[in-house]
Amino acid sequence: MTRLNDDSLSKIPGRVAIPEYDRSAISSGIVHVGVGNFHRSHEAYYTDQLLRKGEKDWGIIGICLLDRDLKMYKTLANQDGLYTLVVKEAEGSQAVSVIGSIVDCLYAPADPGAVISVMADPGVKIISLTITEGAYNFDAATGEFQYSDPGIQWDLHHPDRPRTIFGYLAAAFRLRKNQGSPGLTVLSCDNIQHNGAVCKKMVMAYIREGDPDLAVWIENHVTFPNCMVDRITPVTSERDKKDLKDNYGIVDGWPVICEPFIQWVIEDDFIQGRPDWETAGVQFVPKVDPYEKMKIRLLNAGHSLVGFTGTLCGHLTIDEAVKNPLIAGFLRKFMDKEVSPVLEKLEGIDLETYKNNLVQRFANPYMGDRLSRICSESSSKIPKFLLPTIRDQLDREGPLHCSAFIIASWCHYLEQAGTAEHDWEILDEMKEVLIRGAKASNDEDPLAFLKIKPVFGILVQSKRFVETYLPLIDNLRKNGIEETIRNFIIIH
Ligand code: CS2
Image 1 (cartoon, rainbow, N blue to C red):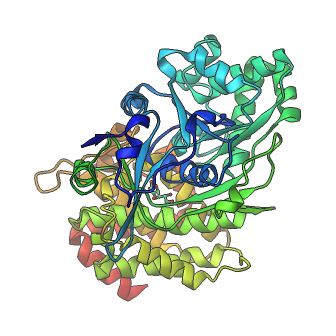
Image 2 (image 1 turned 135 degrees about the vertical axis):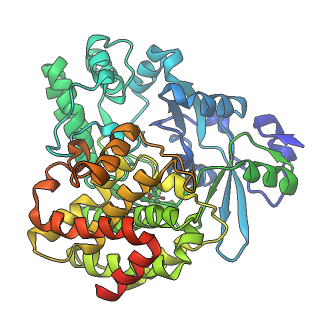
């Protein structure tokens, strides 16, 4: 049995691709905040590909920012930053490799000062982020930065001991400015359309509040390229760890499982340079908008659709749910009738093929991608994944039945949770508000759910949306999910 770390790499079986480069000779041009499974299957994987080709300047220092990231920090620290990536093909084969690009790791709550100095180190040229959609801290209704957030208030009053990404970036920029060090690139890798622009807007809003001069420095020294990221990466299960141990003799506290598909499309706006990621297959384009829009509105919103309806039908994983012909039919209708018409044409991409591939990716039986992962934090996903499509369809007076149905199934999923037959747990920062709204919409005020402003903004003011939504939620309550979808598919 081999506990994964630098010393044991040579004992790993030959069919596992290990990093053969000298990890101690790699300097860290990248600081990455949010070292979860997705970062490890995506940016860290791409970067590892470059290091295998002889690149030496672009190692990654991983930052575990939040208290809840302690377990990840300890695991990576114990393993010298190494971890196993298991890529599972839909027909059953798998490719296993050990990734070496995370050359150091810090746990921010234990020593915020150390994180600030690493971020301010002139050798660091990129700070990349996977901090989740909710962490950008903007109001769904207005798109404006929310100063009232307790974490933000803490950071504004304790600039040397921050807790949120905004406080950390501000402190690091301030130090760079005072030292006369160069600026850098902040690369948001979260699923938000215009992620770079949104990130910049929020960072600037935070910094203008406490330090207007620093805001001017940022305008001249920091860039925030937009990018589209994609690779389905489930939560790691105990079974995954056991399989790795039994089949490869590797003891890894937190391996990563993912699909073979991978995509990263980035705007080439890196003020201090960047790795040659294109040699590992990354696409650099002048404008990433249409790619982001296509991916978030089809894949991510499609996932949410399958998540809510699949859970209501009693399924546990995405592949199981998407094999249910009712759910597959509904997903196809949503993509074809409501999303495709609002997407721009993209050179080199055939939309029909893209959608067919998505369904095939969802159907990969070896992913074990649980619906609970997809449904988690929907209060910050739905405003980014689905509401923009609804707004577009309202503007162009186009169809929105499927979108309204997704919202209705979310509401029904929330109001059913915790009942005797439906024991799913709601994992969401806004859990209480959501459940209260969903339940109240069943007995006090039919619009109570849609009135949750931080999620839906002013959607409830749209007569057309409300008139589409209300009969759907009524049907779900009266007839249940399967009959409602069956009738829905026939009518629409
Ligand atoms: C998922 C995404 O969290 C979700 O709801 O839709 O994590 C999705 O798997 C990735 O964006 C795929 O690139």
